[in-house]
Image (cartoon, rainbow, N blue to C red):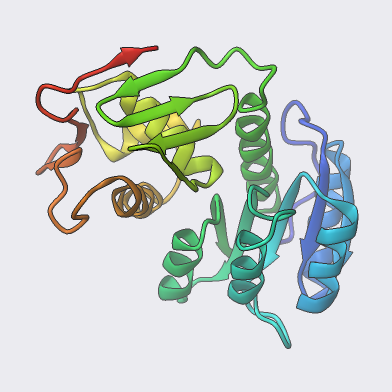
Amino acid sequence: MNESPATPGPPCPGRILVIDDDPTVAEVVAGYLTRAGHRVDRAADGDGGLALARSHRPDLLVLDLMLPGIDGLEILRRLRASEYGAGLPVVMLTAKGDEADRILGLELGADDYVTKPFSPRELVLRVQSVLRRSRAAAPASPVGGPVVSGDIALDPQGRRVHRGGRELLLTLREFDLLAFLLRHPQTVFSRQELMERVWGWDFGDLSTVTVHIRRLREKIEDDPAAPVLITTVWGVGYRYDPAAGQEGGPA
């Protein structure tokens, strides 16, 4: 992280909480985010970070997984189980070789990750991308009308999804991915296409898409091990197949 300070593109100002026990990393990250127009709070451990998240209600969390005391994965678990942190966008900071922790973090509901050592400018771009996506999801945004497909009903204004009358608890990115698939039934999309059209990125680790597809299957499929709604087209990508005879559309 030895780049010269720069403001990477148009700012998407927000309140960012950075939880990292390395003071040098935290200072550099906070500096770049501040220059990009964000307000930044910092915590050096899990307990302090959870307390700040609860009291300050940030717009996004930059979370290091390797922390003393409560580690980043446990912080993520607690946030996702709480009212104040259930929908909080999270960008993880992970070590290069910690693939298992990275995948687990995505499965727990992290929105994105950056691998150490990282470019501070790339981190700011990732943060701004996640912030733009979360704000585009606000009720005042023109996100289209409700969609019904079989027993799945999606309300983009309220950010709510029901299946068979039961509400599904989806993360920000899971909701966006499902909404996109519901609006494009019977169309095959590669992981790269989904990353570009749902995440808004033209770069990144495609395993992010794979993990989110798996999480969605766990929430909408009767048998996630034998999916029939989100199917894999081998060598190509994924396709949403509405239940036979139960196809829906805009409500």
